[in-house]
Image (cartoon, rainbow, N blue to C red; front, side, top):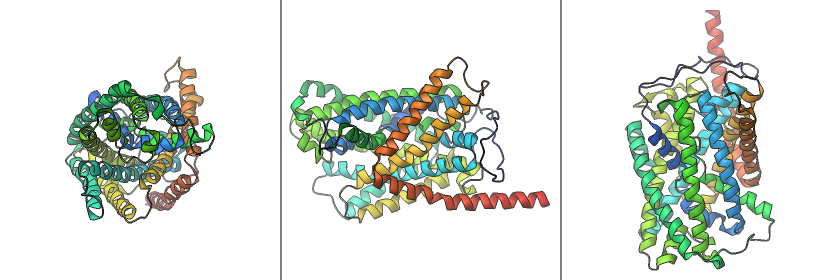
Length: 469
């Protein structure tokens, strides 16, 4: 069993005040399973999941302003990637945003970050399972609906879980293979689309009569789902070799690689599929290839690649669903069972996350709503912004509190600008998520308060008992 670097013992909850600076634990050099290529594949594989294969159709109703939103979003995503890289250099422990928020703002802020991130991961996995079913319809027409769809979605959730339970070496191997496989079809469409691009397919700049700013904010809230995962290397820093260097590099390289194929691939879909067809498409990248070359062979090939990509993303996100509760459990803020690792994987977190995603998939399967994927995406978006906001705020706190020995000197202005950009970017996305997403996301977030109250009271009681004896 391999643990992250030495950590602080749990402290009894007290009034929440910023923590005094303390040096991060010394990293452990042995037992780490992810080198730079694997860590980069983890970031890229988690970013490029099933979302990109469905998102062009999801944002098409807002018009081509969504392309501008994607470009702005990319700038924000890269800023966040740089912020996470700097924070990981400062404190290279497993847990990423949770670790930074807890050290800067105390136990409760750290708990909210971990709880929200945990919610985001298993809700995201349920959304990915919906995406698998959509592309399975392209591969096997006429064999969909009812129990078949539910079975496919549950298999998509549990097969990656089995790979995770086999250990992080299996997780890393699957990520490397799937990251390569998912790049090929996206790059193919991006390049080929340049030769088939037709501006008449783009449709109106804004659709539905809304303002450009409103449409861009709404589209960006959905598109954020495509960049969720920039923190993946930081979340698993305890498994990365030389994390002070490799976490930041993997985060930036993985995000930039995803950004290139995202922007070019989405532009190609918008330019090859007629707008009125794209709005109602269930598999936009497949439709793009069919429009380029005719027939349905290309669409079938892309659908197969999409299924592989989604399963690879589920492999990585299943691990992510266990990392936040693992980090919080080490500090007594989650039940202790979540802190138990086997073969480098927090097994309880993996299993519980998959069970919750399966239950959500079952509920959505029985729902009459026709826009399940978009609903899950928006809940995921809001849940992701909570740890992103807290992490960006933590970086600002570290910079402004004068910890010159723990912040790289000579780059104060740049680091501050990046942190402000990351915070403002995440805040804007909360505003653009819409009332329904914020409402549902807040319900998920505040449900965790009772868990914190239970764990904090338990820790306090143990501390009082120890002081008496």
